[in-house]
Image 1 (cartoon, rainbow, N blue to C red):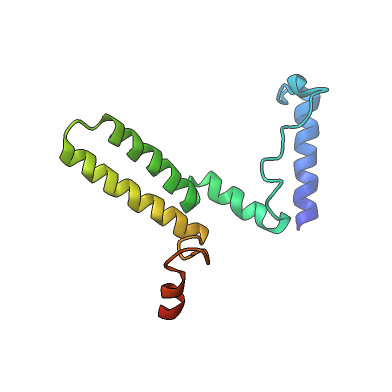
Image 2 (image 1 turned 90 degrees about the vertical axis):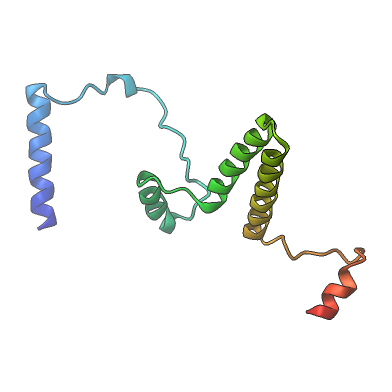
Length: 122
């Protein structure tokens, strides 16, 4: 069935080109293809990522970064102390949440005075 569909599509394309109804692709002639934006994504995940991107989904880490920037702007433009405090608390929470996503929230260096306490606690 796929081959029949393929042949029909090819005939329709050839017919459109013969009639001059095909799209004007002359601006692409002798130009390089656009850079692959997913070159760091494994090949078997690219289709899924592209579908999510086309659906408007963005990764949680990127959404957190955007919210951090917005909160920083709100903090910079806040006039009242109550608003500044509220935005500062939100900013600290968002930064902590971002660090948790990266897996860095529980890292304590051995030189830290809290290292022994953390080890004993765990």
